[in-house]
Image (cartoon, rainbow, N blue to C red; front, top):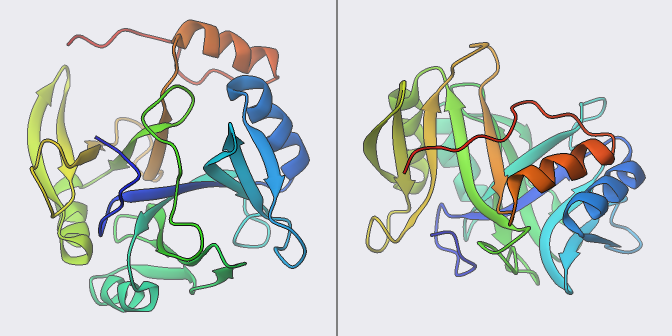
Length: 235
């Protein structure tokens, strides 16, 4: 289960890079009730999504100039520069090397060998997400990859991840856990084979909600789009 006691390789942060941070803050405030708090002078327009004063994500301009709006999932490391070197040796591409985000942490933005963007984050004053696995917070992360087993080998080299194979309707799913602790308890996400465009591998953050249908209506009411309608998944 995803928590806030972060170990190497556990999801510790999600951040939205948006060319229009004001519109993004308004949208997520309307859908999830998140409040946006700017990080202050010198932060380059970055800030924090909060729920009851607790950090549940970040928002700022895209890490790369001209990039489209996108969420980035970050994984915990105690040494961002060492993680960057290990990732490169294992076949990753460095997109943005180790910027310090005010005093909140140190980041490296990477692309894995399968083409999915992610980041590693070394904590600073802010350890990471301050609330998870509760309504309107991060509860799961999922990688869609053309070669799940191949790319999981990369993440094992980088973080020591473990995984268990599970057969789901129409697909093979791999439930991923950190290297430390009971494997089931330490699970935080999954990896699935791309079912559509093989050129679009990606990490997807999942937000827990109390009512998926009501959330879908809130998204449309805030001028968002429904990519897949709400559906029940057996078991």
